[in-house]
Amino acid sequence: VQSGWGDRLDMVGTHYYPGPHRPQQQLQRLAQAAGSRPLWHTELHWQGKAADGFEAARESLAAFFDCTGQGFSGFAWWDYRRTGFKGGIEKALTQSTANSRPIRLVNGVTGPGQFIMRAFRNEAGITVWAINMAVPNADGFRFELAGGATAGNVGYEQWTATGSTTGAATRLAQNAFTLKLPIKTITKMVVPLPSAGGSRLR
Image: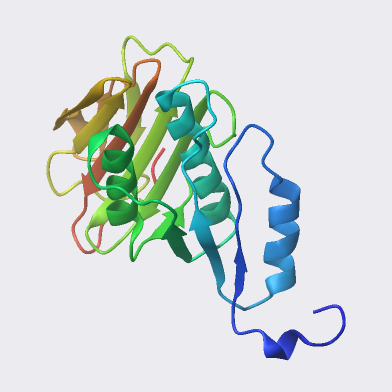
């Protein structure tokens, strides 16, 4: 691009590996240099060198969220699975973010540390991913749509180091719900919306 050869590129790809020292500033510079070209992560990895399986999941999802935050639209898994702890999360992440776009969480925690939360919107509703490594929440986290109402119960799947459970969040109002996110869990919440529903959460 700096040499004036940018018109030879149809897309921009990278292998951005998970881990505690991810080069986030370099990823941002790459996204800026790409201009209007599509950004693809062409070797999305599961962090195999983490202390345990749960820490590996946290670091892997954090790397994925780094990319969605920079506008990446294409992803190819390395060693993709569909079953077990690793495969269950990979499959759920892939299905819940396909044909979706990231949306902003108002007052949501979006940093790379011990609590990470991201939200994605598609035609059916909103999917929220939450990774909690250290934040107590005995009374649960409250979520509220900035506009509109949910079209039904908010379902969730929650992973621990030993497996996963499914259920429904506690509905507080037509536009609000609460859910416990215990320490050392990864949770996927699915918020169904009518076609004219709100697109942001508080």
